[in-house]
Length: 322
Image (cartoon, rainbow, N blue to C red; front, top):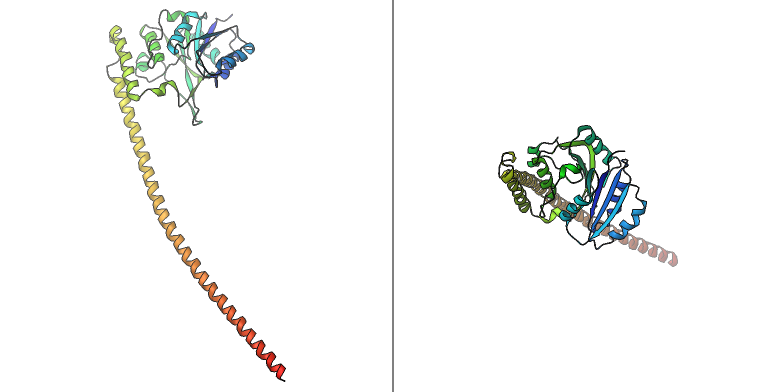
């Protein structure tokens, strides 16, 4: 039998999405799965929906845990202590897997013996309806630090490789911090290039609550902590800040170009409106001229009618006199 793989769904008020997430685990072609669902003190209808769908879930083991709200970091750390699989994968309750996702990642782990297999992402923007697929490069410690590739918890991780490593950053980027720690300790990684986790992005996502500046300082602080222990392996100080500043400059240039185009379009529209206004005035004048002509015609007709009536009356008077 293939090794047991634990899939951990963490949920907080994602009743709108949780059933799809659970069903996507139940539909996996990989047979030996332990499903752990942690509800982190939801106050929507999540619990009712979870309890409704659980009887239909077809995996090896299922466990539903309810707890008072602890936050994502403490919830994931609890799961790391309680899961029993040889490998594990986290799944956010608002995301979902394709049916062969777990099996495709396991095949790479079995063939290569690496500690972590990370997928590409199928990013779905729920507000706009747009979607796209990432194309991450193969793993390197430098690339991970420079944020040239991204790992999220929806990666297959060998449980024994984690040891006492835990999620730590409560502010932001707990995933990045966790995988950086594993990488600095020499754990091995492999990209599942043609496998995608369905990553749904919402306007009110947790990351959107932080400012760009706050995120940048948080990233630098995480690297500073590792610099104390892994001095020679950590990239130069200030790189993330410089990189994100350059990204801002690119974004600003793009916005300025869009603004320039908008201003040109507005100018064209203004000129077009001026032309249309003049054309409408000309049409109104033509209408008035035509109305004047019509009035003249009607006057002519009236005069003719009166003239005709006068002739008839004179004709009849002459006839009567005879």
